[in-house]
Image (cartoon, rainbow, N blue to C red; front, side, top):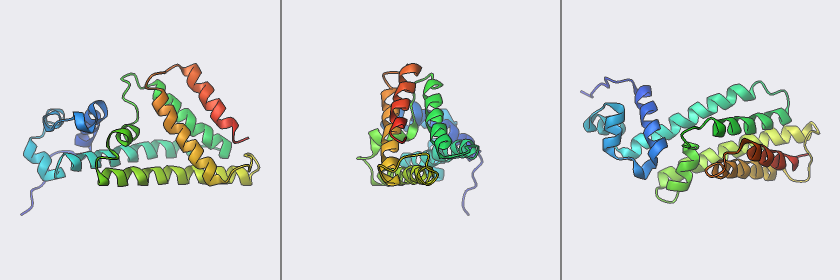
Length: 193
């Protein structure tokens, strides 16, 4: 008879997310996860298989929460320009409100783990493809609405915007000046007009 989980999986994932977000994958030990989640090692192994197993669930959990927050804000955008502004404002606010300087878990994972594990690399590639596709769709609408120029294809602009968002996340590790970050965003977005 399979064992029944006697814990709230969402709460465990929230707690594990905090640990991985703070320490990274390599810096997190199984003891850290035991301490944070109040589960014993055997419960973690039985429920998630391994440290990598719980990390992969944490990445999906984090991505789903981020997608949900983005989705709510994007649903209120009235055109493509507003949608792009929402994405960059959301990122800026996330950076400014990150008082612990944890950064984005997925960007952190990308720099730490992409070349260490094929499962993580696959997750990161899929995440990147989804974000680029979303940006491409927005740019395409903006070009059709004659809001954005057509100097580049929607895909080329989407890749540029994606790279800019990633760069913004990396820049804020050292420079959290709201004024500097706003100026970077303004410069990035000028290319579309």
